[in-house]
Image 1 (cartoon, rainbow, N blue to C red):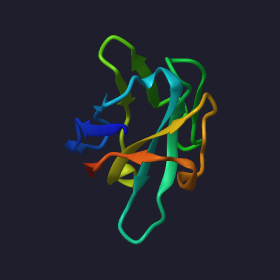
Image 2: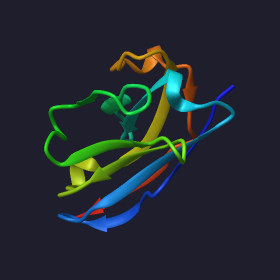
Image 3: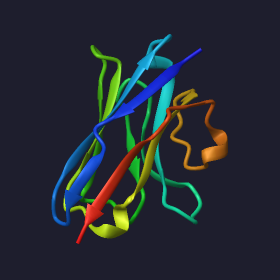
Image 4: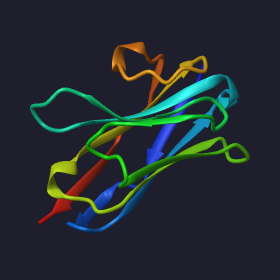
Length: 124
C-alpha cells in the first residue's frame, strides 16, 4: 500500500511560483510512475505532469510546458513540481497519484493511489 501526501499549495499572485511536494510512504517509488493532476471547481480532473519511476522521462500538459517542472528525489521518496509564471487559470486542487510500472499515464483512471490534494490559488 502506498500513501501519498501533498504539500506546498497556497495563495500566490499571478506571475509567482510555488513548489508542490508529493511524499510517499509504505513503498519505494522506484517501481512506480507518478502523475500530478488538478481539478478546478466544476471541471474534470486533468493531467498536469508525470514522471517515470525513479526519475526517468517526464511528460507535461501543453498548457504548462516551459513553466512547470516535475522532478524526483530518490533519497526522500518525494516528487516535486515546480510551478512558475502562475496565472489565475492555474487555480485548482492539485493531486499526486501513483501507478505501478514505468509508463507515464495521462488518464486519471489509470492510477492506483492518490493523495488528499493541496489547494493552489492564484490571484490576479
